Image (cartoon, rainbow, N blue to C red; front, side):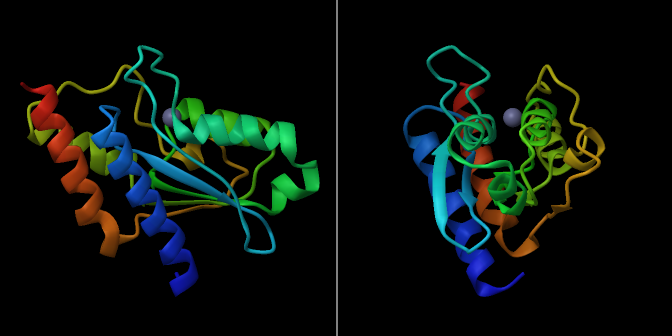
Length: 160
Ligand SMILES: [Zn+2]
């Protein structure tokens, strides 16, 4: 993990923070093309009532619309939290390349359990299990505490 990749992951954490401030769940993601250029970024937007508004899903759709198959295959999606099965599937279906995440779905599940929060409605399968053809890297331990803190704040708020 070089400095450039860490910078993309820090941007993901920043987007996750923006999501939290806006009342959404703290997840953020960026799509970087094969030449290392940022092409798209988004954050979680589920507060409006559509629980599928995950950034990784939005980026997969954006890629399908704006990038050629070769460009998609060469792109990397960086994300604050590992793709859920829905997003892993979308990522694989549109033929995107590597995934790099800060915190794993397993870590998030452990945190939620420890904080007394209910698990999500979808199994926390690893992205690489759902999308076996995709190279998946993470967790990136040095940024995990920042992501855990955002989720802790969200859980506190959700717990009332
Ligand atoms: Zn997702």
